[in-house]
Image 1 (tube, rainbow, N blue to C red):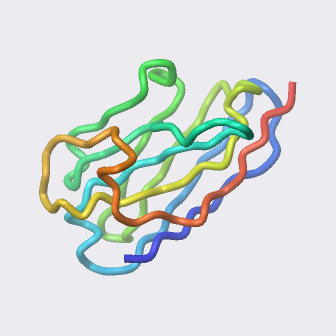
Image 2 (tube, rainbow, N blue to C red):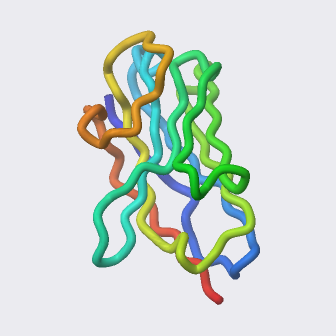
Length: 126
């Protein structure tokens, strides 16, 4: 599985961005997909995840209500809609795939994810 994230950029505080992650491989549609981020000087942290069917989502508490994860298995795509962006959301955002197939409960642990994209930079100016 190869993952390619895009959609990052520079946005003013209060603005929105939608990140996209394109995945190769038909089995992607059976994987839990997640988004993580890493701010300068900080550890990589969980942002959101979505089960293989799209029926279950999970978010880090501080981002609930502002970020929305979704997927389109027919297109092998995962998205992260980010609204009301804040300067503290500035980070490199990574998409990742958990190859445990057909699991209903998305994991938040970094170690649960087996495949990682290259990251896309989001910069939020104040």
